Every structure is written in structure tokens, then in C-alpha cells.
Image (cartoon, rainbow, N blue to C red; front, top):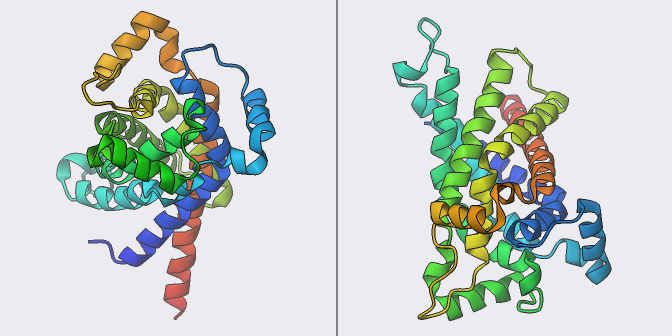
Length: 289
């Protein structure tokens, strides 16, 4: 069991808020590009349009849901704990040293995708609805959106796209944490704020390439408003991806790649720095007491 559970949880919470505040405007563009069937423009022009429609407040529409979702908490803190669990099995450790192998870090990262999806899906559904252009006039606030969603679609609607979120998270987390582990063990890159930023951003870019199709499916599924007696257009990851390819072409699986990669590189770089810095500071303060 982790020695300082409070430190791990606190660092995860700090990392989540830092991620949301740094990347939310780009995250909004990412969502809009992914759910739209029209050709996407440039990220800068999309941000400019958002700003012209309501200033800074418009750029941060849905930020409450983004800050409250325990994504970084489940992701970073969960990975620390998963690494300890996986590291107790000889299959995933190096003989003699007992250090976690590259494969072990991949498995630990993948395992964090499931609890993360369980914790963030309700917040993701609300965030996607708030960010989508077609729902701008429908909801005035995050709380109003959540209440309207439950009232009109049922409490189960908060877990719309849970399977797609699991698929996205497992692919991203596995690749992300495996590369961070490799940077420290194979490349011997010492952790500090500057290297944490570069390593976090680089790992996020590669992981984004792997997870983007599942992310497209998640956004499409969660953006739909379910109506009684009507079958949703997108119902599962594979069915959604098949339909997207058939109707829009293979390249549509990477719609919004630029804003998505920018969002993940910035957000993960900031959250990685924040998480590691917070852990180091709390550990130092605890030892000095």
C-alpha cells in the first residue's frame, strides 16, 4: 500500500486543475472538430471565433466539469498504485533488481484506464455537451446541463460512452506511462520540472496518435441526446468507427488531430510537472517536520 496516500491524492488533484486551466480552450476546439461532420478550419480561427462570441468566458465554457473530473487523480495516482501492484509480480520485474520492466509499466498504465473512465465519464458527458456548438444555446451552465441531462435522458445518461472512454484511456495511459517509465529507466532522464514538461508532452503526442479514433467515438457518442423510442446513430466504439469510415472516410478517424495533440501535449506536460513537483514538495516538507 502507498506510504503517503494523502500526498498521492493531493498531487493528483493539483495536476487535474492545472491541466484543465491550461488546456481547456484548445480542448473545446478539439471536441467541436471531433463531433462535426464538416471540414475543420484552423485551431487559431476556431479560438478567435469562440472569443468573439463571448470572450474569455466562452473559451472556458464547461470548465467546472473539467476541473471537477478526477481524471489526473485517477490517472497519475492510480498509476503509482498500479505500478506497485504490477511490480509485485515477477513477470513484470527485472531479475536481480526487482525494477519494473517496460512491459510492466505498459500493463500498469493500461490498468489505470478503467478506474479513470469510471470516475470521469459523467464529467466528460457534461463537458462534451457544454463544448459542442450545437448545444451552445441549450445549456447556460454546467449544473444546468447536468440536471437537464438527467431529467430528460435518465441517470444512466451520465455514463454514456463509458466503453469508449475505457478504450481511449487504456490506450493513452498505457503508451503514456510506458514512455515516461522508459525515459527514466532506459534513457536515464532525471526528473525535474523542465524534463518532466518535455517528457510529458512528448509521451502525450505519441499516445494521442494511438487513442484518437477511440476519442472520436467517445465524443460522437456522448454528444448525442438520447430520445425515447429513437435509436442513437452512434452506439458503440466499433459501430461508431465503422459508420464514420463508411460515411466520411478513413481520415475522419483523425478529425481534430491538431487541436487534440496540442491539447494533450500541453495538458499532460503541465499535469506531469504539477504532479511530480507537488509530490516532491510534500515529501520534502514531510521529511523536514
